[in-house]
Length: 341
Ligand code: 8YV
Image 1: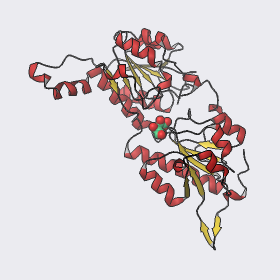
Image 2: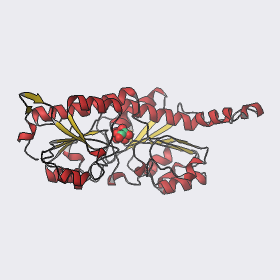
Image 3: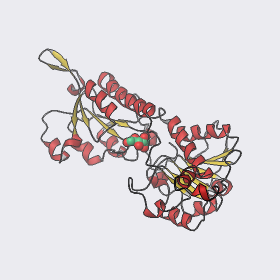
């Protein structure tokens, strides 16, 4: 780790007054968080620089800390280019866009914003699941088109009492499972390893879980460990009466295989909040009625985004006052073989 006690961490004194600590902001954040960040730190907006690397080369002063988001991430090349960088505070729980091995090599601590977003992501997973099974947004389109005048909406499928398969029983997966109990669902899960004390049955093979489940809900961490975890085989195991829900990362699902499975009716439907190349969504999907497509809104509530912003800012304050982050991404997670988040 780069030495956290160097001069960059000491309050900066400017004409006798204690000045704010400098924070380099990489990428935009929500306006309320940008505002708080700017009130509490001396923020330099890297996103305003047409050529960030050249800009950084011209800096005479150091930036001990950087603020970014899970959406924007930070590449290793950029980490190495920031003079004096010792900490990165990221807005979001996902760390697949952050080059953690590079951060470790460079001695840079990295934090994310876990837990504060579990409930909203789980709520969204639940909304998406109810929507795809009951045809809620499809029924809304039906009504707006005036089709109700010609007859009733098609029959849909029940959710309560069905079989729920959770892929990744991390903090978000567990919050989804807890909601499932309220719907009297039979719940099983797949994870890289059984979760100690979990109240649900562990299934070693994902295809087995898919074969069993009526709803397969993906809540894994992104990155190489979960890339295309939901493969053609898994989709075919889910079968023509099974629904896929993905609220984690688009990369966890083989999107081309999913499009093919949906078109062939090899699965009943899919509700997706995430895609492989956001914000681009395969055109084939937008033409289908048995999909629910959402623009990555799992955490997008005032309450959760503000809580994420507060936690990111708390991490920056803790770093400047103690040299340590509050919610550092655990070392154990800097491994390519992870599927829970
Ligand atoms: C946000 C997310 O979309 O937390 C995550 O990992 O994907 C979402 O909360 C993201 O943080 C915004 O950049």
